[in-house]
Image 1: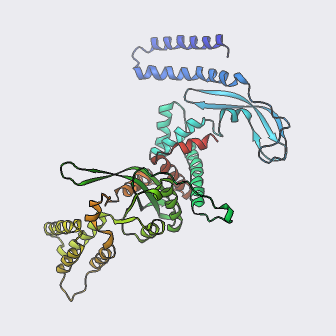
Image 2: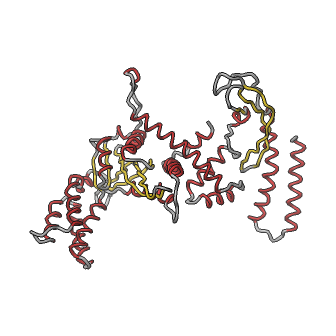
Image 3: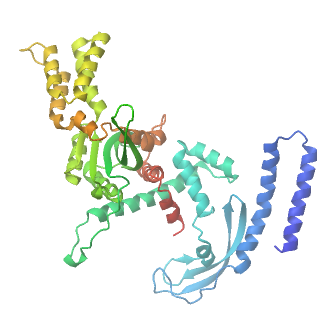
Length: 445
C-alpha cells in the first residue's frame, strides 16, 4: 500500500462513515464509535501489512544449518500467507517458509523477527485473552468479554485451548524451579552458592491451607495453597497496641500430595527471601501435613494456631454443653476467648472440665476438641504473639483459597480435567502474585 493508496483508503472510509451517519441520524455515540472502529480496523490491517513487509518478508535461509537438529539444511519452500490478528487490525502477511532436509522443523524468519507465535493473534493479544480467561470465572463469558472489548473474535474452545497450553507451560516452569531448589548436586564441584533475595519486610509470614475442586473421573480433590506475605506493623496512637497487616502476597496452588507440595512451599518461600527475614511467622489451622512442612522448612519460625480455628473448637464444646441455649453458649465462649487472648489456656481447660461431670466419659466431639487445644497449646500464646506484633489469623491463606481457587474454579456445576485445573492454578498463582510478566515473556520466546 503506497502513501497515495493509504490516503485513498482513509478518504473512502471518511465518505462511507459520513453517508452511514446521514442514514442513521438517531445513532448513539457508542454506535457511531463502534462503526468507526470496524472501518478503522479494515484500513489499519492493510497499513500494518505494508509496514511489516516494508523491510521484506524474511531473509532466505537456503542451505543454512537447521537450528533444531543441527544436521540438516534449511530449504526454501516458497511463500505462505498468515493472517495476524491484533485489535488495531488484521494483517494478511506473506512469509518465506523454510523446511529442514533432515527433521520436521519448519521456520518462518519473518515470524521470528516479529516475535509471532503459533496462534493467529499476536503474543500480546494472546496474553490479554488468556488473562481474561483467568480472571473471568467462565470460558464462555471470558470469550464474550474479550471479543466485546477488543473487537477481536475468539471462541470459547479457542480460549480454553490457549489457556491450557500456556498454563501447562507455566506449570512446567514452576515445577522445574521447585525441583531445582531441592535437587542435590551430583558432584561436589557442582555446588554453588544461591543468591538469596531480600524480603519485603523484616517480618514475613508463610501460611498454607487446602480446599476442594471437582476433577472429572476423580471426584473432589484437594488443592494445596501456600501464601507468602509481608507483615506490616504500626503502633495505634490511641491504644498503644501494635496493629498488624499482611500485604504483598504471593501464592502457589496446585493438585499436589503433601510431600510434593513441600517443594513448591520451599521454592516460593525462597523466592520471597524468607531465609533472610529477621522474624518469620507461620499461622495455620491444625492440619498435621501443614505443620510438618513448616517444621521441615523453617524450624525456627514462630508457629501460631489460627485464632478463629481455636475459637471454632470452643464453639463445638459450648454447643454440646449448652445445646439449644445460644445465650449461655455465647456468654461462655466470649469468656473463654478473653482468657485465650491472655494466654490463659490452663483456665480455659479448667472451665471446660467444669461443664462435664467427673467420672463420665466426655462426648467424642468434646474429647477431640480438648485434645486439639492441648496438642496446640504452645501455638496459642496469643498475648505474647500480639505483643510482638505477630499475626494471629490465617486470613491471608484462607482468602488465597477463595481468591486463587474458589472464585474461578468452584462455580456452580464446574468440573475440571486434571490438566485443565493444574494449568488454571498455575496461571492464577502468577496473576494474583503480580507476576503475569512471566506469562508474557514465555509468549515471545
